[in-house]
Length: 324
Image (cartoon, rainbow, N blue to C red; front, side, top):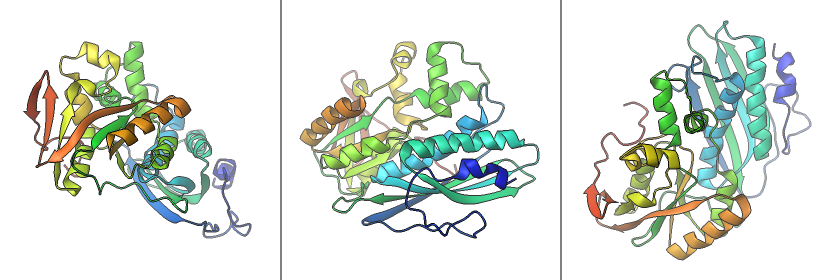
């Protein structure tokens, strides 16, 4: 079975050693100048996904597995290099589905310039468990993006659009078929998130040093950046880059965009001139929006300006916590 999957495991790119073959016990690659960044993430059937969700092929499941890990590398400003994939699959999974899973993994890897260097495949009696470990590099002369180091008066900005994935998960958990183009777009945001690897490189290149991905929720990421600097924040509800259909159809759509999770955009903090420069570059090079949504300030806690009034938002219940 492993040999039949070999075409899906072949390197997308990267300096793998010639001596690393499929019969060897481990992958070997040459190190590159600069820093190495590593991440690992797992998706468990019944917790992170369900196979009975409508129109959710194994190919998209593979793309999502890679995307959530690529987003972690992007959040650090790393260029993806190599991936190791570990699959625990019950006997009910068909070989053609495993091939489609690896097809999706390979698509995302190639797009990011990442080698699928190997991994493991095991039988299991329980649910499907999918794990990817990714390794990236930060080129010499650049520093990793981090959550720490923000300053009072800096602005906060987020890439792309927020709120779609949370709306899509709401539909899926309610067992509703997406019927409109907006609903299909929301569900697609769950199935096939877009890691912002190239955007992170641009943020670094203009001098931004503080950033993180918002997969656990935009509020939660603002809180992490603010707390690491012993600061608070004011968020402008009307500046959140919400999906337009969500803003029109839901009275307090801003709350979902701020508090819910599963978007894989980047939040960054920097002096406003740097963010303006990043916004111009992202629009020009990637046709990607960067929205300034608030300001870090002295004090503690996060407040949201809604219709001209400041509302204090407690952190309890905001975003995603793995053991809640």
